[in-house]
Structure formats: structure tokens, C-alpha cells
Length: 85
Image 1 (cartoon, rainbow, N blue to C red):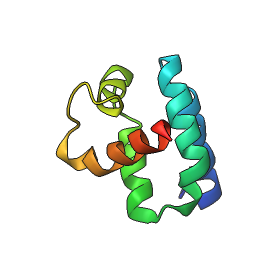
Image 2: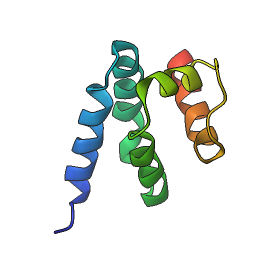
Image 3: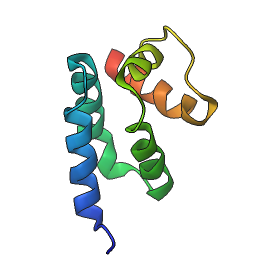
Image 4: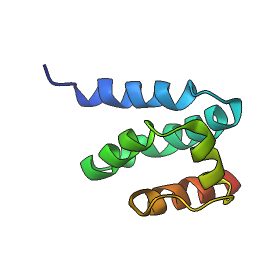
């Protein structure tokens, strides 16, 4: 059975809010709240894949401590810039 668009957005918003570390809860929930609804299918797929990454790695990527994988560079940069605003 296929997931509806609305259900997919809600699922990703919940996964953005309920991470393993509080810092990523704050960063990703704020990003998801303001950006998910405007993303196209390709961007949503990439964001969904990113949600499977380890929180410790995500935090280091978003804060610039380590470089993200090439496949996530643009998304991580956008999340970093959004959080710093």
C-alpha cells in the first residue's frame, strides 16, 4: 500500500522531531516545519534518506565539524544555513 503525500510529510516531521539527541530534534524539526511542504519528490526522497543517518554524524555535518557525504552536501548546507539564520 502506498503512503499518501500528507502521511509522508507527517511521518517525516515526526522523525525530524524525535531524534536521538535534543540538538538534532531542534534543528531538524525547525527545518522540516518550514521546508518540507515546499519540497519536490526528489528533495523529499533525499530528506527521507537523510533521516536514516546517525544523529551524531548529522550533528557534525550540520555544525561543520566534518564533511557530509557528497549525496547530502546540498541538503546539509541548506539545513545549516537555515538553522544559523
